[in-house]
Length: 187
Image (cartoon, rainbow, N blue to C red):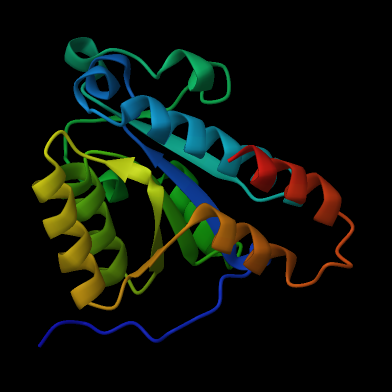
């Protein structure tokens, strides 16, 4: 019987962002790779305003290249891996867990390989991965859709950036409401 996650709202104080393998050679072969990078950048800008931590992983950078240019400075020292699951990269995850950040927002590529295996491992650990729909992609659209369906079938939350941002704010009287609203308008 598959592990079922309970339905949770997304809370800023419980959130962290894991950016999976947004690398030069990978994003070039994914049709919506540039869009994924732009949406990820928007999510990260909002996270910065709210003090939400982020980290990134790189899949075999010797062969697949470094982090894409817009994110390279932000993620200097991104954890390198050979495993497809980014859950093996413990530096950030262990800090987040110790700080009570169990809602791990997922961005990256490819949905049916590294994203999926990371999500499955995080669920197995008892964490709550949240897949940001606009910020994940794959070379093949059908493979992306199958992976989204598989994750949804085990209770993983699949949501949009705008939904995440407004859940983080909780209310229009949040001190960062106007700044976050500007980010939403730019999406």
